[in-house]
Image (cartoon, rainbow, N blue to C red; front, side, top):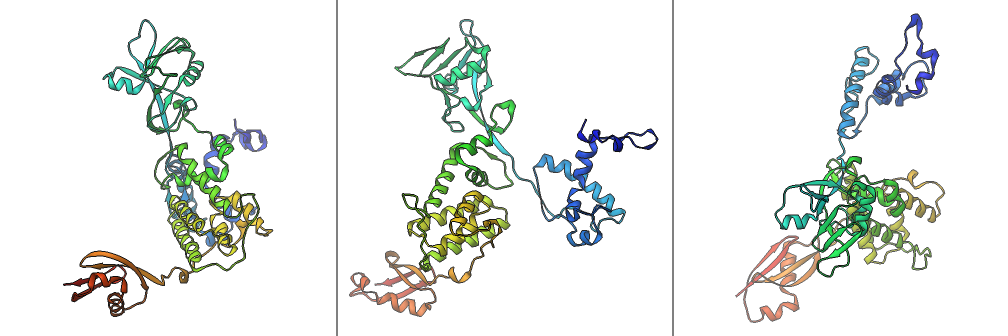
Length: 435
């Protein structure tokens, strides 16, 4: 029974009736809690009419398909019932539904031959079985902790991995494990071509992350190795929010390196704080405000993976410029705060702030820093590009024609020839036709 059953006075109603204590808390309670959030301290009713008319409904509901389907079924029924009684102002409780895609896992298996070999269970490397045209086998799942290069096309079990597998599945303690490198049997590896260890290629396929498939990744282990910020950002970086995505720890190193590169923008090799109060250059401001614009727009679209890409581009561009200016990096810390909350909080306080970065205003871009002052034009002679030149972005077509033919660098291609036509494609290219 649920803890509610311990409330005997409530459970034992009048006239000998007993209230149900298992379904009600889980389904009934979760069917209207969003209404209670609108006025959580009201004792006389679940929410005041003023609060309900102000908040009305939930702007966006995010949930997995299985959970959301069940919960929406109950909560919509309850809301419609309350609406019919005149207790809530809207018929539908949720304006928008977003189903996030499932994080999938890679299922690793080894091939168990249907026929025994010399009376022993016989496992064979997947590539070896394929090369021999063998199809009469069963796929036996392997715990991903035993697999080398897990998730890659070349994932495999070495001799140490096979021993772990046997300890885990002792019914296969006397099985034969055969691969192109040799045979492992009863604790002994017999090489076939001077190999030192077994190299059994496993069969990898993407599927549901499940205990029965032995491919569940413990988030605590990832956090211990890479940190919570890296784990958080990598989950966002895996792909579009609403699509299923296979978990692959091989890719997390890229996000880890990005966060280290971001951190190193604030410190020197000796871990000394090196932030400068110099005025930001036009190029640095352009990089910053390009990132701010992209991240804000992508957040509205819930395109979090492209937000992470935007941060990577900005950090890469600023690192090339060796930027360590507070005018650029302080707004960048605020911008990345929802994505890397712990690192940004640490950096924010290093800037001298006492309040949390998550209480600070979120940056908004300024269009003036995104306006191009100049445009780089390829200059072609009879269709063949000879050079590139920067011209003012607001230059007229006539000015571009005149300036292009006066470039001294072009003399060797046009001297002694007649300029028959100058073709200008604004913002793209200039072609001088000579004959």
